[in-house]
Length: 144
Image 1: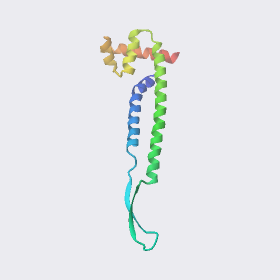
Image 2: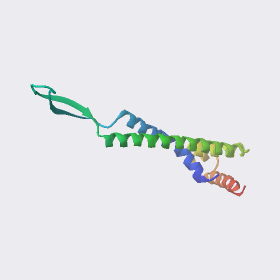
Image 3: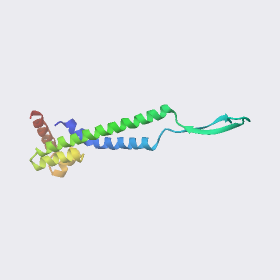
Image 4: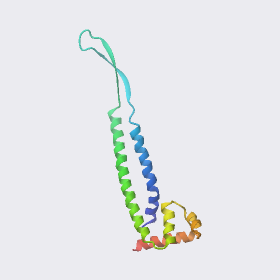
């Protein structure tokens, strides 16, 4: 277990939420349609001039819009899988911490997003104690 993994865990949920918002934006806002008139005439005599209104979007715009949606869907799927894997690894790591205070320190820091000072105040210990506990467990997990 590393600090980087624990820190990324805290932000991954927010990243997923932002990407879901982007995807919803793309679904709700398709490429703008172009509207115009085309001049034509009747197929048979007497040839009379007529105007037909047409609308649509450029194929290039539509294609890039669909590609962006697909890219976001794929990215979301991968992020969710990564998030679930990280949760599992962190839960396994936390179950190996038997001391209640030490486990709370990790819960508050990496699940609840509190600062070391906030955790120290909540548990009535020094901030340096919180830092030492985190470093001790992370060093032990690297060694084992």
